[in-house]
Length: 151
Picture 1 (cartoon, rainbow, N blue to C red):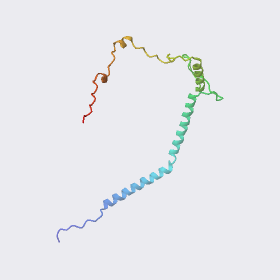
Picture 2 (picture 1 turned 45 degrees about the vertical axis):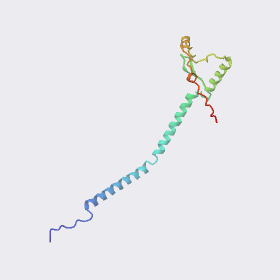
Picture 3 (picture 1 turned 90 degrees about the vertical axis):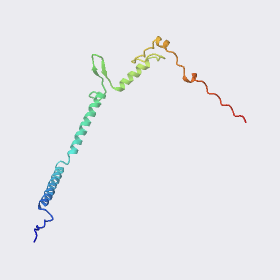
Picture 4 (picture 1 turned 60 degrees about the horizontal axis):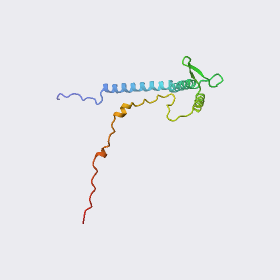
């Protein structure tokens, strides 16, 4: 016989062991994940409840800042800065006071609105030095009329 070698098996033992090890690792990871979902299934619900509680507290604090009220629930005024004379009052009361102030003042045409900065006047020298710009169409010659063709 010639130097013939024994035929190799179609499936190598090391490959078979590697495939079984990979499957076993996959099974262990799947079992661990299933156990974790059963143990911590309400995590999202707990976070949602905490977020709703925080949102309710923020809205409550915001409402207190917008409309301060006393113990009976009636709107009140409070000092913001007593040295400057700044007071926080309810918006309804502030609008009523502003309307009364505006009704008492007589309107004048062309006067400055209170609380705004009047526009600065244009210096007279700037107006006298500026030459009026002639439009370009006025200096261009007019197009000639076409003459009718004679028969």
